[in-house]
Image (cartoon, rainbow, N blue to C red; front, side, top):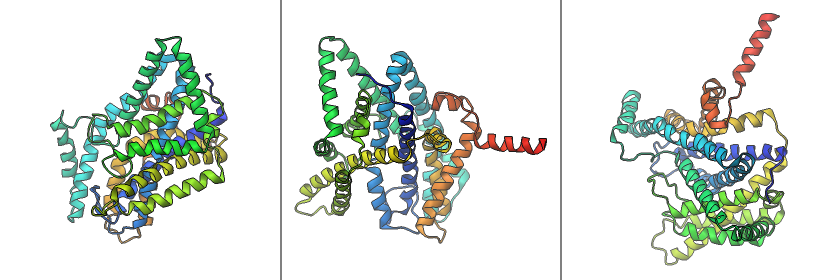
Length: 411
């Protein structure tokens, strides 16, 4: 049964997607404040163990939330506009930003790592850092399309291709296809409406987490060879979003807020934080059992936070507002462009004698502010905006300034 979501649902889902992407900006902005060196570009003089807890929790669900919403909107677009339009839109809005964005952002990211290393030695040469970044393109094809935060677009393309291929194969058997859909719809209805389904989903996800290179979700940015545990987790959330759109009201059931679900989420978070402290205790006699428990609690935290996030946005952002709509429209651009800006600001703040929380807030707000200004000036009303958002939209911030100036001149 195919359905399309009403407009009031689209408002809060747009906000959810924006939240997932903006949380990613804050996540990356936090990495310089971890009290131990983790291989990030720069390490600040002010650090806190609280940052590690935030990173652990936020990394467990932000991309899973994004992939679920992406699957939901993908199914909507597929059945509203047809397979041809859907295929072209995926190439335009995902493949083009991935390819062109990589060539633009890769040298800037490399340069930020070069400058970050210099800053930890006490000096930064901006010009030599930028030069080293652009010289890195001379190493191609080695490292092509890897080493940036744009890996999520690559996996989004992979998952979309797998879903379309699976759908095409099933459609070759007209008698078998309806039966598969009927049973799948029943399974998704159980997932959305049963508390026990969370435990089942957490168990399946924990198995994938067990095969990650580290504890928790890996970041598959080193190779174009698919990382199958990561692909399975993100693909699972995408497919769930795709199938939730087939039956009206199931997403609300999946995201229903209740004391029991919130309690499970809190339990998952607490246990995950406690067990994470053992991950570097390689001599512990029960490390394998501890990691298994961590994987399950991490998965429970993941599913809980995805569901609770959607439920909270459904409750508080159910109606479309101009500000939320603007942030939702700009969030894709903000996430694409943010990483070099974040690292450059981290370098600028690294040696300043301020509290880490003040720096984190400042870096996050400055990154979002700078990226929004660039969006309003050079993206929103241009061809870039059409590629990213599907159509051009008039400038908002600078449009208001121009209208105010026009009123003052006519007064």
